[in-house]
Image (cartoon, rainbow, N blue to C red; front, side, top):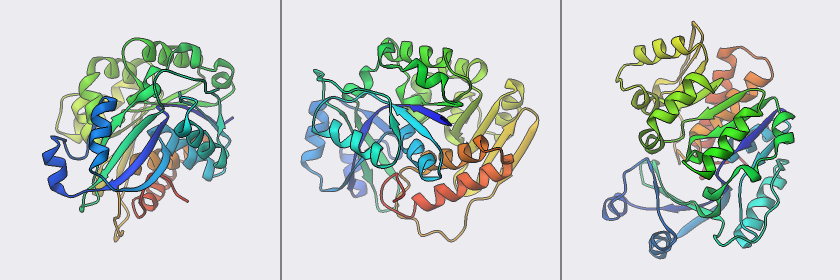
Length: 309
């Protein structure tokens, strides 16, 4: 198997909202907020659902990799409920091997409200549900050992059982990639993420805001120097400034695509990772991998949701 992803198995509920909705509900635009089930249901009452899709950051990337013809798999915790069944079916339809046997849990399958404002930015409100209860018993070691790259998401990392699952996965992997996921995650787990990037990860994906927050800088030059010091591969998306990859002392930059009809930024980073990893795992150059990531990202932002049909 080329790549195995481990991430939060979340059903995405996509809704269009105005700017006032974000302010009135004390949300920070373009970031993710964790809520409990009651708060989630309360928000949902005032929304019109556009679409419901099997989601989760790494799962979206894995589906993108499958669509590009790679043999891939996914581990993510769901409940044996209606949403859990939909989630599993959604992956299988995309030819993703699902290495998790759902069972009756006390907590429902995780759900994420993706709130799209008129400027196409997306703000997420997540009830992790049973996805956030992942533990080391949920990790299929043979699937990890049989994959060339393990791909993890920062959203999944948390103290306690999720961290034990994370550590078990990393310790049994051949090569590890991870996305920092969100500024919220970076701020919450800064010291742990810094340790991971320096010592455990072979490939790190981040947007400019996330990586600058991680190393406390406002200059891309500092990011480049930090990356060189780690001797690892760091891939940074920079919005309309394109993307940059730093591998040891090699620095490669790729321009963003122009004249795109922007519809929804959901999944931009996820599909960028799909394209880049597709290139990387199939032996293309850093520039070609960046270009494939940019191509995939530009396609998904011209549609609603985080997956290409």
